[in-house]
Image (cartoon, one colour):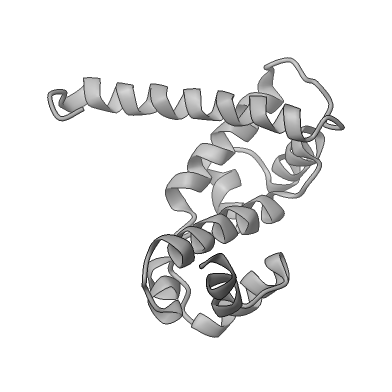
Length: 148
């Protein structure tokens, strides 16, 4: 990647991201056999685009409306598509992505909880802690201690 620049570099990143989502889709079907098999249709394209936008903007944008607006669809339609494809709401997917990001920072860095909250765009670290506890059943400190 260091030898590639401009539009070609952007295309390579986009292709790698697309390949990542295909790999995620394959893993999901192995670990969640109850998910319905679907053709790679518009619904799959929408959820793939949502996941891509989520990976880019989750640090700063957590409302479903933002993502729906970026894809020029309604929040209701995004909700319907996510429920159909993954069986969960878009808000749940946002929270899951945030939880993964928080876990990564807790296990891979020595950053304080306050610094992690700031890095992920939380105005109040206690809100991040409440959200994390709701998703995992553990506080960030308990998770970090358990992981070490």
